Amino acid sequence: MAGQGPKQPSTQYHHHVAALAFPFGTHAGPLLSLVLRLAAAAPDTIFSFITTSKANSSLFSPTSKASAFLNVKTYDVPDGLPEGLVPSGHPEQAIGFFLKAAPANFRSAMKEAEADSGLKIGCLVTDAFFWFAGDIAEEMKLPWVPLWTAGPRSLLVHAATDLIRQRVLGTDEKTLEFLPGFSKLEVADLPEGVVSGNLESPISSLLHKMGQQLPKAAAVAINSLEEAEPDVVNELKSRFRKFLNVGPFNLTSPSPPLLKDDSGCLEWLDKHKPASVVYISFGSVVRPPPHELAAFAEALIESAFPFIWSFRGNPDDILPKGCDKSSLNGKLVSWAPQVQILEHAAVGVFVTHCGWNSTLESIVGGVPMIGRPFFGDQILNMRTVETVWGIGVGIEGGVLTKHGAIKALELILRGKAGNEMREKIKVLKNLAQSAVEGDGSSSKAFNCLVDIATNHEEV
Ligand SMILES: *[C@@H]1O[C@H](CO)[C@@H](O)[C@H](O)[C@H]1NC(C)=O
Ligand SMILES: *[C@@H]1O[C@H](CO)[C@@H](O)[C@H](O)[C@H]1NC(C)=O
Ligand SMILES: *[C@@H]1O[C@H](CO)[C@@H](O)[C@H](O)[C@H]1NC(C)=O
Image 1 (cartoon, protein in one colour):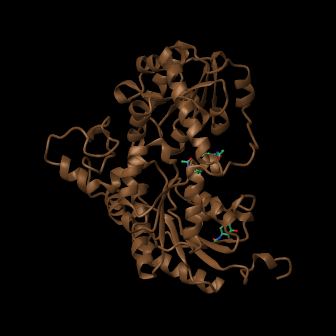
Image 2: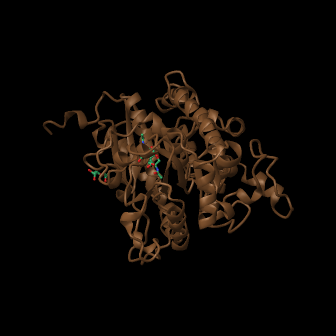
Image 3: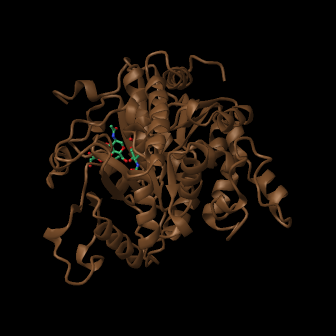
């Protein structure tokens, strides 16, 4: 077709990488950002990005950065839902059906991609959740590179699940001292499904199998930096053939300049003193219970600290009855430019669910955290922030109360402790910035990944 020349794969491509993305939650985005970085670094390589059409269409909108890459092609796999099924609304159901059909579906999409490009796939980059990709890669004699989108500490927990269960189940062991880097953490901090809760739920068994398969991978990649958790990283390096810390992605693939700040958050922040404003966001997945949000709103009103709250829903549901919104010393907004807010000098504390991204963004922004974790790796992240790095605190009692919130806000915004946290976070922030520089650890790890993807490395 005229004008479409460069879109056609041609002899300009010498290598072919397939990327298999987990289409649920916010998993596919980080895999895509890694693939785009690889695609920019290896222009002679074609990347086939395979996921469901739903996930694809949200990532590859015509105006997205991704759709501008000539060497990234998309392929769909079915979502695996039986025809006529009435969804239960429970996300684990959809995940279960997807995973059951995934190995066969991915195999056939990969055949299609090989036929289209005329190039055999030479490397398989996948979400780490796809433990079965280890078998596919073995069969096809390919290097497998799983990407873990959370932090190294949760990764070690899943890699060491057999050991943890052996040491903890049926005993009264409460510490995790037998795991390198875990001397300050406790059994109670572990994600559910490791030694507590349902050990056989679809997600628990997926993570368990993943942990068992990862040592097969040519390299395990992660959105983190080596220097953040050296003990944990060294242990993972000893367990995996290669452990490549290629993050923080937020620094390695900066997002395009901010297009909108409709609610004027940044301008509003400009009017505030350094380290004085509370920024609150619980991410896009978690919805804290209304009574906790109401308690936190009361804490903000009573303490009168200025705030920006990124809040989905109707603010009237959480504000005290009859509260005049114009009298608030802050802003409740339905969307906020989080990264830019965290990088603004006026922000003094981030109230967060401690998802891995938010934690990294807070570090990059130099802002101490108040953690209210909910599930998965969030408690581990919060405990790392609190006890390992000393750059924040968990909310007292684990749930948001007016008293606990005021205490934590005062500690960080008024106390000496807050300043000490800011000093410690600055050290981490500088480590993150050095890691992504030309000869930094994350850049070196990324170069190694490029070599694996383009088969320049014996695996
Ligand atoms: C985390 O950050 C990555 C890279 O910056 C992004 O692609 C992804 O969507 C983010 N995930 C969440 C949960 O916001
Ligand atoms: C992925 O989404 C983009 C944008 O909606 C679309 O142009 C493209 O055809 C889609 N690819 C597949 C394989 O569905
Ligand atoms: C960092 O990640 C967030 C998602 O949590 C994303 O919205 C943002 O654009 C990223 N920022 C940079 C600088 O890459």
